[in-house]
Figure (tube, rainbow, N blue to C red):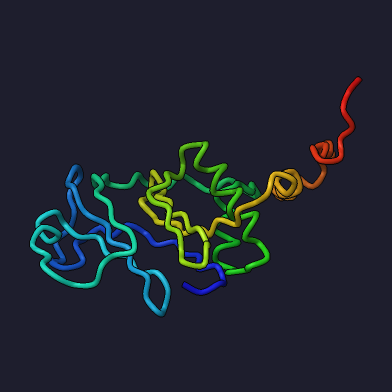
Length: 185
């Protein structure tokens, strides 16, 4: 795995990658996530196709899910920036300078139960990569974990709060740095 973050969002398929048969509401299927020289590649297989799979490359990550027909998309609210919109935007930019913000946005979405961590991978160089599943769309988000130190979290939280706040709202109060705050008497 390279030292640069490999970010990826891949949508859940509506058909089996091997048979081409459409998934029906309530069908179980397997998702295989592969890491190739070109990045991450996702394959969704029907249960029968997965069980019949005898050989092939070992997936980076693998899980079983229940197919749910996606609901129709609600109309998009005007000029509303959400954590999910920001995460998608920064991932599509593929900007290594936004790794801390992307990680914190993913954690926020996990707490809101919009993302579900499926797996954590540790590379030989110590880099941690977290694989998230979007609970409604079935998309896979691959997010590098920057392994933030406690003294870095407040700064990243302020940056995220500034991105999510309307421009005309007052800034949030600065959180004290635990390493420089004098003890109370």
